[in-house]
Length: 283
Image (tube, rainbow, N blue to C red; front, side, top):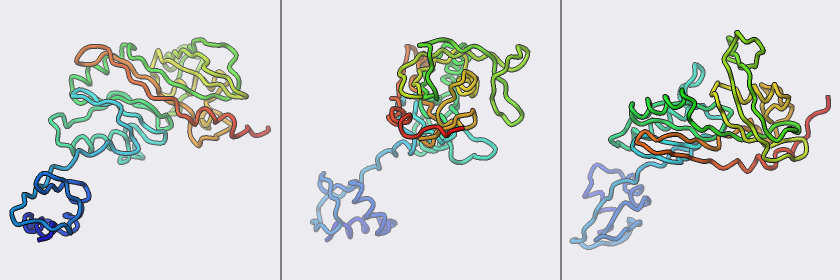
């Protein structure tokens, strides 16, 4: 008897297509050995087993950085929302990961939102898997004890080697963020920065959040006169990467189970050549 025939006899509800998928996925064992071809002849007394399917991989385009029973850390690409908006509810990092966690049928099958990145920003995002973990992480964000480090490629040459951007940011009715000098408006925003590299008419910066206001890095750098490359919303005149050149590269906090945890995502290699590929238009 051929192996494919044996499988269909042993699993009468399976279609030929399903049997072929089992074989291609290396899920069929004959007398303990993996066999991937249904045309193989086997004896009447051969032991044919179907192994459990492997757990599904982290859904693309996300990259799994860390997972345990309390939390999950991923690397989000630019262009993907963290959570749903009125305009987009289906394709978000949260929706992709929630469905993935649920599909594995683990005992910790929930996924809870802790914070978010802008659609245009890539990098590290943490999600909680239990209510207790969510409370612990969000308390740390509220207390400003979470280490949140970004890198940005900005227009122009930033002269000072480092400094602190202190001001206030406000959101209008369209949820657009901008800086303001009105002390009675908006919320305080504090960002520390240091120059990593200057090249031509662009500067690579490392930025550490003290406060975590939505859009504060983008607004403050634009107000400084150095908008992030690709950030048309905040006045950038060039877009060689077809994205905003802002990346969340380090995330550190006290793990809900105890002890300090820190995660890193490398600076996108494209940031290194962005300043060389496109010149700003003449005014």
